[in-house]
Amino acid sequence: MSTRRQLRPTDVKRLNRTWRRSTENRLALILESVTGPFNVGSIFRTAAAFGVDHIWLAGNSTPPTNAKAQKTALGTDRLVAWKDPVPAVQAVQAAKDDGFTVLAVELTGDAVPLHEARLTGSVCLVVGSEDHGCSPALLDAVDGVCYIPQVGRVGSVNVAVAAAIALAEARRQEWTAQ
Image (cartoon, rainbow, N blue to C red; front, side, top):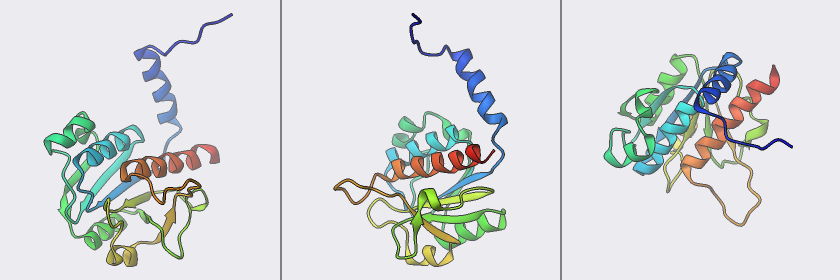
């Protein structure tokens, strides 16, 4: 009978290398007015894990250089390109100019469930502020909107969790399409 054990660091690197070889789609994020430093740090760490190319900070988002953000980012802000915050619509336009389809993760009347959204190709996902979500101006500027279906008695999840779920779904769609 074999005993299950955790992979050694070299085995983890080998496993990650295998997944990297089957990953071609570009992913990016826009954080609109995400102010919680622990949320920002967690999003950067998750973005680095899923191979995000760029994070545009928008509105009054906290930069990952914030000391509290660094506690959860663990230096991953060096692995994902980012710039200081700009107005949200400007961030959307910058992502579009870079060839991304921009999709907000938000609850709107025309939003599609995340698993039905087309998250292949070059996709930039947008998450909004912890309290108010995405602004009306940003929602008018994006190419589409998707939401995370939930069946519990809570109406939303933490912004860092939402970003992680959306990034994981984008990669899942890419990997299962191969």
